[in-house]
Length: 274
Length: 328
Image (tube, rainbow over all chains, first blue to last red; front, side):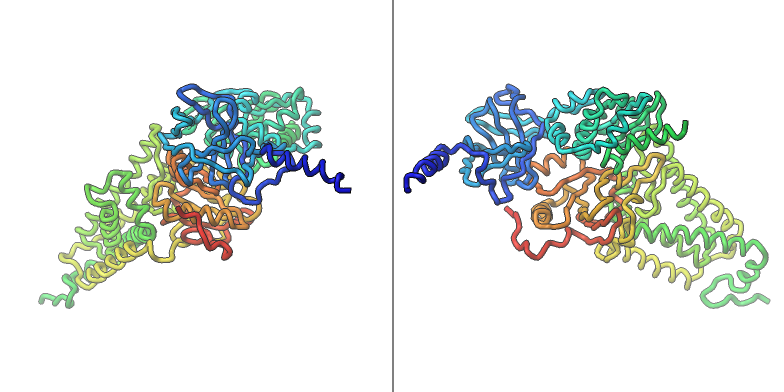
């Protein structure tokens, strides 16, 4: 009878000893090193060599800490603003869930790698004995397809994945006969846009191949942009909706909560006016 | 026979004789209206003297004095003239001083309008403090309409007798001292709801800058339209050690989500985030929208379904379960 328990016990012991995180391994109840969401705000340069393939995550509950992992650095790094320190996370102690959110396991023994300093908006530290610089990416300015937004900041794709547009509204928009164009003015520097624009991207994806086309226009911070000035755009995100080539209305503020509904309202208003 | 003047009132019966007819009444009305406008403006600015001082610095009007000293002096001058006119002192020296003040206001608002028309970023004039926000054009024309006609009427009906009435001058002096004292102590007084545009009952959607293209709080934070939120106005460059960790602790423990809002520049926000590691979201907003919402920072307000339901100086109330903090 005892033999029935030998194999499972051996397997469990092996799993524990290997240190590799199994999917079912316990997420730490401690709220400190959890809820790291993907971010594409930065690029890391080590020894002046940019490493764009690295994955980065940021956690507000963890005090705006930034987790960096991937090829090019010897193991995951955790930047802890409260301590102005860079810490090394042992391999295998970071779990990235199916939803894209990362956690540092409760039993991870973090070791201090270096201190960090800020230089303007960049963050400087050392990895091994090599200087590293975490640099903010330049803002997206001008017209860009949705794919550029997703490439620029993986956080956009992550948050887009969290949004489910209303199927009946999407269906109704797909059935529209007159061409509809939605110009979304946004700022890649704008925190609110980073929450809102991904929803629009998801709606655009759902409307792919339909008469409703969504375009994106990046506005620099300060709004010193001729196109934005010409169209009287003084806040972001602002969506200008054109039906049959004619502007029928704009989307701003709370209307972005359900972007497909905001677009449909304006399309219906234009249809009623005809 | 020479009539004897009434005690303390030079001019006496001669003055009384010159006060008959339509001119004196015209003068009284004009002086009272002008004085009342100046007094209201003085009181509104006195409620938030720091904002007035900041405006004076921005306009380059401190003349080398410390900003608050310049602000208090300016309030004293404006308040004294307003009181004098309300109390009917329509002598030439007072009207000359009032005319100079009106001309100065029109010069300021005219300059702001010209700057705005030529693309220079211009905030609306703070002549009436933070409670009244006007575009540069509106400020100029409203000042012109409110100040010039009563001033002209006051001149038409000015008193020509020599000297100044001692008792009323004493009243002006006392009143001016009271106004300066109010301005000096106002920041410590619980007047935030009175002195700013943020008070219980205000709709978030109504909190906007002025102008042709207003910026509104509801656009900056559309999530405020639904549910309950604590919003804390902060200056990330001003003494963050007093509040940053405590706000992070409160944010971690609060059942009502807490969001911080700042008019600080983006670089300062970035530096703050890397230094203090906040656990609360920190949003940036334009200074013209946020400045009229506070006298001192931090200041917090609770919204429910798009309406301000409570305000408090400092940080949101900390839940009793949170006793420790994240201090270094």
